[in-house]
Length: 136
Ligand SMILES: [Cu+2]
View 1: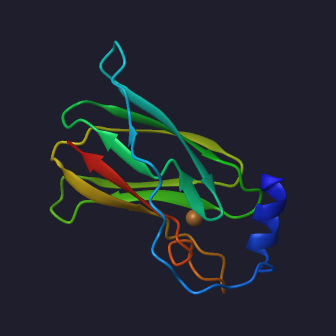
View 2: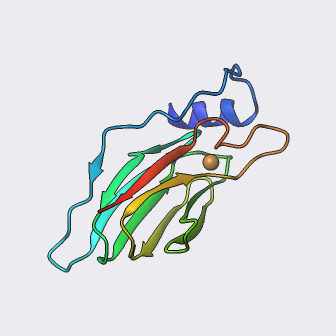
View 3: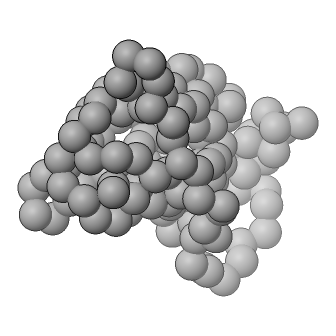
């Protein structure tokens, strides 16, 4: 089911709808494990992150397992703080699982987005592949 949707989307069969702001899912507070690491799993599909609103604590390591469930479309996971406290760009090929580790140092809310595109389709971010990281 998911794979079929990904295929159809990646060959441009689905209808093109007006761009809308990314739907923000329910905030997901990532728990701190006994070893002090904040671990969570994020599923990447065309064109979404799930969950897409992550809440973490500053100064503690974050370990995200990024699981792509698409079969053709490559995605990535980008978090950039314009002020420089975060600069993450992690590719996640179709069907792959990648572990991403970082430690946020500054509180704030930072956009998560994907800038991969299969030319000439719109970029996933244009299709709403966005989320946010809230650092407290
Ligand atoms: Cu993407």
